[in-house]
Image 1: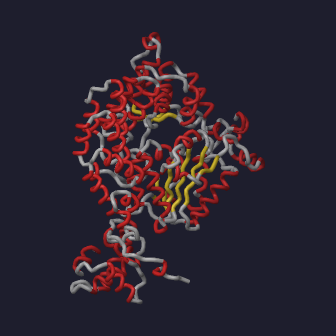
Image 2: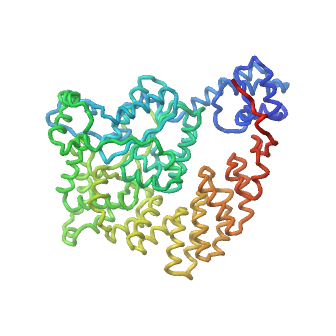
Image 3: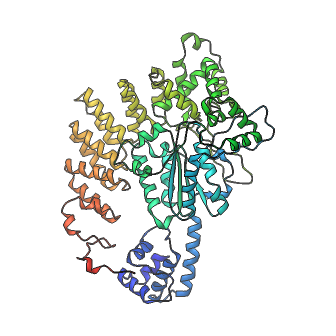
Length: 614
């Protein structure tokens, strides 16, 4: 509506519209040129209704067919509808099931009668830190907190409890992005997250890990947290210490910068709690009393989450069920996300069995093994359980499919506690040949690049190359770089890997395209460089990762793609990435004094041109 009005008003300049708004004291809004430019051009809902009304009012006066009063009311109504229609997440007050947000199910107790879903919560020192973060968010500041500890130490439960003040205040929403894959889900809605929203990033490594996708999520979070018009927002996450160390090892990365200053450490043992409060809570809940009585070394939360029972279940498992758990452990530690295709587990299991054990398997061995691994551990989730996105509900709604693998089959998840246990106890084990063969056929395409990296590190060059080829076929530019680089070392004159990579790599990832160009150039694959450039990466790469864009610009210069450099530079300027634009050609002197919102260089200005505001 705004754009139609703008065109009918004769497309006045920003200066003209800003002057008309400033001259009318009766307008509640007072947008200046840059704000007016965004209101007319951007697809996002403008943050200020008053500014929108001011713009449409002055535009209507320049037409013969629009009534100023009517158009102002219409703009108000449409603004409200747009804000409500674009709201991300669900009302926080409607989020009443902690297990939907991946809080661990507690053990059951033979001594328990009718008990609530979760045991009573006893605060510890980290809860006071987290409460301070939530209090600041409730007061209007955009905040982020990431709790760091090992598996089942109480991180997610602490985040769940910390939301209580926001539930009581009302008006907050919660967004838990996880479907179809966590980075994709986060990126899909991050630019639409609005004020008073909790962004729930449990298992934060699944959002911020994995290279370029994680960098894009981190960049989006930084933009969200820094935008006053979109706040307050609260971002909550959880990490294992090893994941935190891996994510923050690169000082210049977006991921490290977004995590900086957000970490709250959670003790592995139940220290710092008020003993009297703990005993009082135990008197009201048999599960907590049992955990206090039997937990070793004060690991009460781990006991409540079924950790010891999970280990006992692994030890007592029959060979096929144990092989399912081992295959899941290896898939996770080799780089597959915790959504494991059943076909992968089924094909890998025989490689973990002796010949005698395999010969003794019955026809229903897989069903029996999965029934064993899915059986709850004292009420907590079993070792390996099926993932379902459809949950019980009341009333009518659009049906959602079960979570499924890329081949349409079911997917399973490994219990966190066993994931951590497997990484510690199987660190020296190289998965058997059958595992890698199953991964090449059945692993999710998005995970085959990481699996290929793991195979290469262990000297399994053939398996690694197969996985990298598969990932390249599905568009992974980083896997394409590895495919070209590794096979060039093994077979320097064979250009088929380079041709495959140049034809199949996706072009939306600037850092990945830069790496691939570098590998092709290093391999002397000039024809393949030309083929990749013919697909016009400069017009297709995303611009939400400045470091990746900078790397791509450097590579494009190296391969002599001047027209692509120019095209990418024009895109940078159009979206306001002036710092990156200035690195190209002689633009720095032309834009010495910055730019106007329309894109042209600003006129010379100095200190005397700045206003003194009291």
